[in-house]
Amino acid sequence: MTDPDDLTTLVPKGLIQRIKTHFTKRIEKAVQSYRFNDADEDSITGALGQALSTPHPIVVSTFKGAVYSFAIESYKILGKGPGTPEKRTGADGIIQITVESDGKPIFAKGLPFQAKKLIRYHEPEVAPQAADMFRTSGSGIVLRFSPDGYDARDVRHSLAEEIDEEIPTPTGFAPLGTVMGDWFLKCEIGRRDLTFNRKEPDPNVEGKRGFWVFDTRILKADTNRPES
Image (cartoon, rainbow, N blue to C red; front, side, top):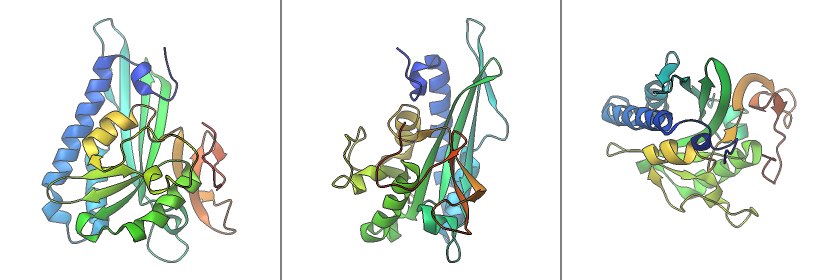
C-alpha cells in the first residue's frame, strides 16, 4: 500500500538505498571537514549543505527499465540581524528532496533545521527555536555538530507536553544519517512540498519577507500542526 508522504512506499527499494547511501556518505564527508569550519556554526552548516546538495539530479535506472532521478538541496536561512527569517521561524535552514519518475515529479519534501555546535548546545536556548519551527512549519529537527559526528532530534520531543499527537520518532538524539536516510524518507519527519521562499511575505509579521511555502499556500502560524 502506498503512502503519499512515505517515499519508501512509492519507489523501488534500490532507489531508496541509493538515496540513503548519498546521505550517509555526504554526512561523513561533512564530518571529516569539520575541523576546517569549526570556528563558526554558520560555516559548519554551510559545509554540510554543500556536501548534501546535488549540483544536478542523480539518475537511477532499475533492471525493469524504469528511470528515476533525485535531487537534494540545502538552503541557509538568513539569521543575522533583528527580525530576520531565522528569528521568526526558528530555523537555520531547510533540506529538500525532489524525486522524478521518467521525467515527471512524483515527490517533494522539506525538513527545516536548527543547528548548534555540541559544546554550545543548551536546551533552554533551543526549546523556543524548536517551538517556532513547529509552530510555523509543522516539522523540524535540531542538529548538533561535533568532530566525532553529527546527530539530530525531532523538535516535537521538545514540545511533547504541548502537542496532542503521537510522535513516531525516538525520544533522544540519533545519528544524522539515520534521521535523513530513514526518518526523512518515511513519513516520520519533514513536510510534503515544503520549501522556503526568502521573498514570501510573512503572514504573521507585517512588512517582513522570508517564509515557508507549502503546496503554493503559505503556512499560517498556529498552535496546532498544519493539516497533512
